[in-house]
Image 1: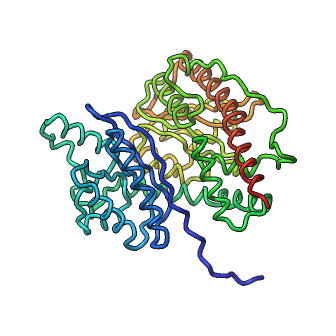
Image 2: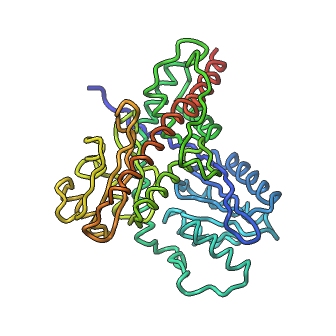
Image 3: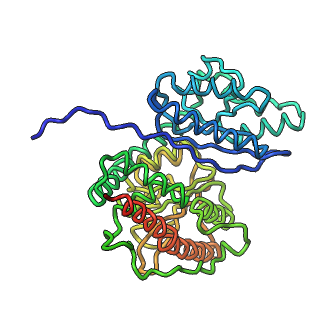
Length: 416
């Protein structure tokens, strides 16, 4: 057996994605989502990129909000950059930081950076900014556990652990996609492959984990065009698009819509949507509402067995568990996770493709035992799942293939 080189994997490069968030009485917020790691070698590049985003927010009259949920602190690089950036913003709105990891939060707190304000969540930051703009005194109920940044809440820790587990599950697929691109296009290193994957993900607003799975499972291109003869597909006529204001090309928005339609149909306080990852054939959590963090953590680290979701996927029809304490489809671990987080009844709806393959599952939770959907609700769930399946099929055959075609064109032109 060959000895291991012992070299640690290269850290993921830092990425900044920006999006507009409404929610303030007199202004919006420019949300800057950061992911990856930062070290002293690339701090200048990142600093320039951050300043560019902040200048964009200032020109548009928007509050800059930095989401650091997925940032690894690399030495003092982040602190120096934030310190320099905030000093240069004299007379402008404070830089808001939300969802920072405990280590980052502690470092920022101890550095006592002027012009930086920490909040546990984006919702809390928006509430505080709205309160400040209206001049209303802050009610005690709004006080955050971030008042002592050195003592993160259990919810913060659960979220961090859940995010780490999700990244651990995604990392091998990213590695496979990088390897595919390196071999197929003769790229010099994995970093080059990651950059083109990241840029394509941002350009088409396709989640990176979705894009890399498609790269791994799609048949290899045989010419200059990856999918020759492909024609644009019209957006299917969907009930969930009838109300307008929903962009079928935005995956997150559409899956959130499916979830909230299901919650409304079932009059359920909580639920989540999972979609099958074709590269690893497992259900991946994509959206959730009203679910306790300990249960979501259980869901992410689970092996896809012993849940109503797994039963619905395997059987191809809706599965109802009116009493989690006695439901035979549940494993002991799942039963314990549900009951200890206040869920007593569960209902799962499979999203089936035209060929009858399960491509996702919608699951709802209720706190009271004995809850079972009515016949009318069951029929409404079936129609919603049909809509979700039609949209997901269109998305994969249009938006996702557009992204793959673009990636192929970029790398083909880059070949020597």
